[in-house]
Image (cartoon, rainbow, N blue to C red; front, top):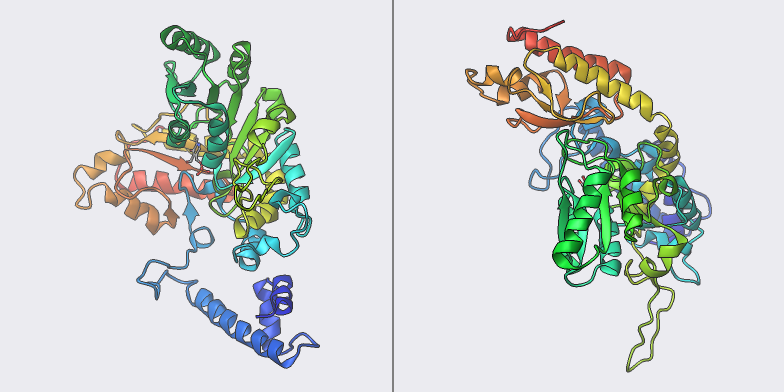
Length: 454
Ligand SMILES: Cc1ncc(COP(=O)(O)O)c(C=O)c1O
């Protein structure tokens, strides 16, 4: 396939545009080979579009061993899956993915200096500057998931046997990043409300110093944790870390891309975000941002020289292993970015919707919220053992009855059969959908005669 044909397709990636093309007109001035290549590609896309259209009804088994069904979860259902909500692609990202799905498709115009974040066409360099500004840090890099951001930092700062402070609610990927660097995780215990406090962090640092004779190499705390999505005092904790001269990594997996994040105001030395969790991007994607002070170490370039060939690759950054996201992952992040920037300004409304739903759930007697309440986030851990699960004890479908009832009403995303203590996320639902969701839970309660307070 000639580059010219590929480029023409790239420019016309919207399915609507493609429909126009294959109805008749080909671009003018194609030579015979190009025309043949173009027609072949159109034929492929025609069959893709036909597949997509025929799948718009109920999902049907895929031709590839039933594992690749075309997903249509947001178009057809209300999806309350706990970790998918804010990672769902925008229409712009879906189009970018079609256009830039090929590996290395960001590299067409890679010119000296040969590095991903320097490419100006498409505007990857400008996007990196925007990303840094977005979280108010000096420099940013895209990484294959938040976990690779942790890894870059731990691999730079943590030596063998070095203690690293994390929260007792830290994500497992933080543990792995520390382990890989040879460090040792030290968890800050939680208070009664499942919060990590600045005081508890200071106490833990003191304990570690006393027990190991070492000052921790890093403090790494999630602004909102993955278990309860409770807010933790990251500013207070960053301040404590700095009092002991320890760098602070802010884990914004549940914040960067959904709410405003100001890394400098927080006092973060590193801000890490997850593209597929919170930035409407393809997996695996994420961001690592840092200050100019730390960039020289975490974003250091290679000094390695080939002993036989004397080759050098000076511009490549060691922790990034050179370039990172080279196709649809990055372009999906870029395509979603304007929407993502804008939506962070509407976070308060998202939290209101979350509280509206949770309030209506709490009106069903026996339901509890295990996360802090009122909610400050759209991800919430609930306990319905005392409400919906009382029905499961005698229902012939056991716990699955509840999922049956939800899916009958077009609601998906819970783990079927695992709905005693469970998590859900209302992010991105419209008010209309939130009302529908709340009414659906109430209706299920009424169907089974569960008492309500209102
Ligand atoms: C709090 C938290 N941090 C980090 C991660 C890892 O993010 P990623 O999948 O982008 O590596 C997750 C993923 O679930 C998470 O919940």
